[in-house]
Image (cartoon, rainbow over all chains, first blue to last red):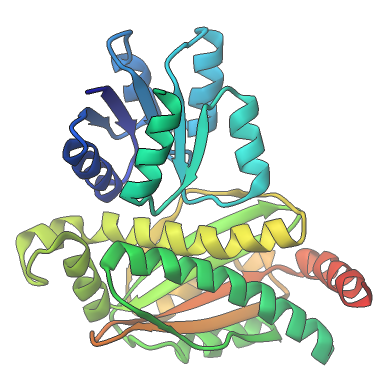
Length: 117
Length: 200
């Protein structure tokens, strides 16, 4: 069982991801903003799920801040933005993986298996 | 004016994006989305109102606008009749359309639906034309369909390239429109790129 924190400003996406993670036997917590994520983040988490387009701090801002903090927790960007440029930017800023919404359970299992193999 | 070939090219680009967006929406609701071929035209800003008035919903619409900037600038909108937005929210969170939960969460749900559909369309556009776009936070609006026009930044637009399509959910009384407007400066760049694509 892994402990995963989700940052997404959409209630629907937070709930959808938490439902899938719970079904897979993982523990999850969810916050509605980048600021809340950075405030709550500590070494007890095994993975971060991060939305990009959020009010206040964007996901890109969060990735930059995590780089400054020398974050070692894997970050999975989960976004509706399907642009190649955004994927490249996210990976350059330290994201471990990049997924497009709407995320399926199979995709999530595959990503988590890759991260925790 | 756009040539027939330019219109064909941009229709196809929008079609690809709408296809991706509808696949995502289909996954969210577990239902089939029915699509129409996009309509693409260049009109003056004065004609935008009549374009908007053609949309369904009349005096009760729920729309989500996402402005975009970068190589191309403009406004992308998903517009649903008010009743359709309630029914769609109900499908998403499995609550009665007239429940307090839907009343409370409908706006956030529509913003997320708009976010996913419009990102798919504009992202495909940016990818195919190799022109990354920056997105502004999606904004929602509920009210008279003409209010969408009143919310537009009129100083930004002169001639407008409009792309319009609509969708419906099979077996449900849910439909919506997608309306994308590019401002004039973007339009010039866009026609150059389309010509290069057409000429190979």
